[in-house]
Length: 231
Length: 231
DNA sequence: CCAAAAGTGTTTCACGTACACCCATGC
DNA sequence: GCATGGGTGTACGTGAAACACTTTTGG
Image (cartoon, rainbow over all chains, first blue to last red; front, side, top):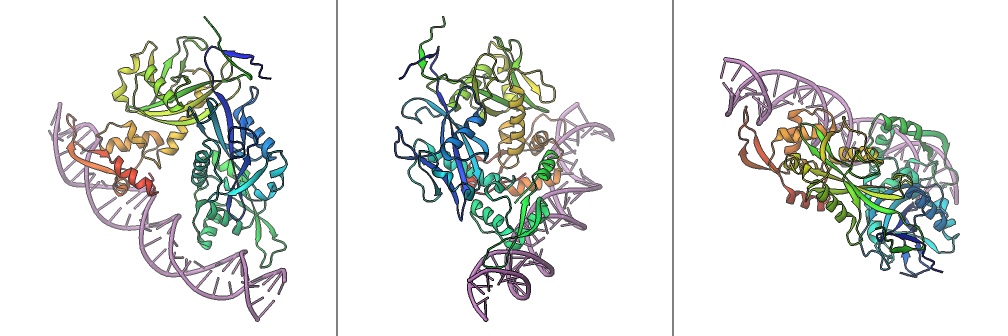
């Protein structure tokens, strides 16, 4: 079983990646998986695992996310690296954390495709988490709050076509405060990064809202020129 | 010699830390050390080295900085973790990078205390760097530019007592653009985080400027309350 | 008295903020 | 026709930006 074949002159820490996956429903949620092996068997934890020798950190994060939650092609960004000596009770494990943003509605089913059970949790109603995952999650949440104001990453949480109301609700959820509708729309229209699709919602029990998409190409150009953005 | 005594079931990457040390002279500078061992022997590189089993990442960064440049107690913050597979030609090495800010004048001498030669370089006149250190340095510079605007980290580059002229020059160097003197002073005085020391410069060949220090305690309180800051 | 940097206010304009009503649709 | 969210404009105040001269000190 444990045929130990890789030897080094000095001890080496194990290297893992962990992903904090945010999704937006009525509230901002995180995806957690229930551990089926010790340590912390049965506890909830961030999806993640060991970095393979033939993959970069980004690749490892994407792979773990795919294997453990069925989520593929999500927005993934490195967050922080945690290297406390005793963060894993077994041995020294250094973890590179990532945060991911996905459209929760498109990933409602896959949450249980894997053998492990996965589920979405509200941020204010979390179970006890394994390892130092609560700390990682908190830092990820802070980073999301900070970053959403000056980078258009929040769009990753929405469907491709969205209404201005959904967009505003997304910002309100992440920033944790209500925004004025008219002022919000003024700001958004001045930023001028949305494409009006000339379509409206279907099957809503009220006046149907116009649909928009985010203009990624235009944003990329502006970003190259160093143009900023602020919500 | 190479008595290999630590064995694992799977191969493990080596883990290092690298520090991007910024100092302020007339210009913003970085401290580099000249490598005295292969690979890249003779090339300039960021100070850094292997993480020991009994120290955290932060501790490793502080130790390497001390050992290789004589700098102790500097402001150090984790930057990013680089995990490209072939970034070190010998074997897989993952590095956690840090950026450090020091008062260059207080660290002018120590630069050569260690066996390795260390020196300060202007950012626009860099030698060829070992490994992917140029990439790390660029990312560190970007981060510094971004962060200095909403966090009072720039003070780490100045002496404890400084003039408003020095403060402005620091921001101008980091942001890479000139600032209006009167508007700058207005902003600084409204932020209200400087303590007027009721002292003036000595030995200057012109009208002596008042000296100030940064009010760290007040900033810590405001930060807890979530109050922001903007230059 | 000259050089060199310190120090100081006002005006203008853009933007953030506060705020309330009618509209379209499905049931 | 009523409930539900969609969509729109104006007035006010604050803050950013542009801008030039006098003061102090050492040499």
